[in-house]
Length: 323
Image (cartoon, rainbow, N blue to C red; front, side, top):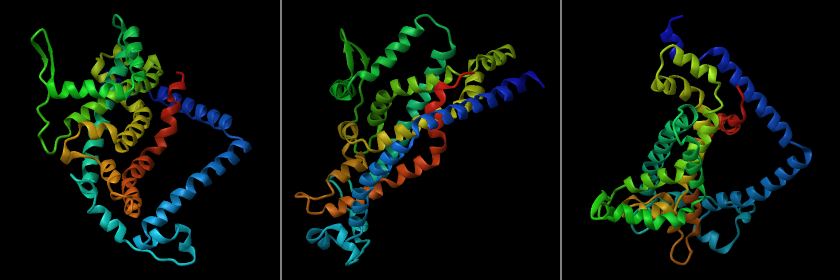
């Protein structure tokens, strides 16, 4: 086997050992967290959680006049269903966007706001785990401590930075973004979400990457691999479960966000949560449209979760894996 092949492919035996350790940790965690009492409690919670959701789902298909005069449970004795709520909901919304256009805006916001922090955090996590530099531990603690800063405290300074820039002693440090009058601009929302997500993303990915057996990294370095080859050829393939786990969290957080997007997005770039907030009407007399819009909004998160759920538990438990 050539040195190039050794660099490109991680040691298969070590990789299998990591996978076996991960499965063993999953089994141990499953055994500790599973009991008859916990199962019964989970079933009861699921029932109480599901009944309102089911009622909302039924309401989304009921004619608007029926929702004003009777409860959703009357559908069992007098079933009446329509798709008009969904059709009307897609063409309704807030003053700036309809639910249909806001759905597209949410995709345009969420995808980059998920990818950007993952890319930056994976690079930072590798540096903290495998590059020895002065002040590494202190810097990592500082990054981790940024998680305790409430988002609400950072909104006004960040908005001021984006709008006016930063100047120290008449020296422009950051010019700011002249995007206040741009109708469709997502840059500020992407940067804001990336900033807020980076501390947790770095912490989660570092926990996994630091547990990768050092023999794999050392073998690659002996064969002449640089940090770039080690990162892209070894670290990223092995860290896929952890990356997928954070991707699920970040996607759901950004998709369901209303506060950050409302503050930083331009009028034409508002997300679906803002349209849902305005969908029920001035006096809440069209809440049946809001129920239809709610189920439209959960389509994409469900697709993302079920597509990546096989990595979810493995990624959460990966930090406990020992080489």
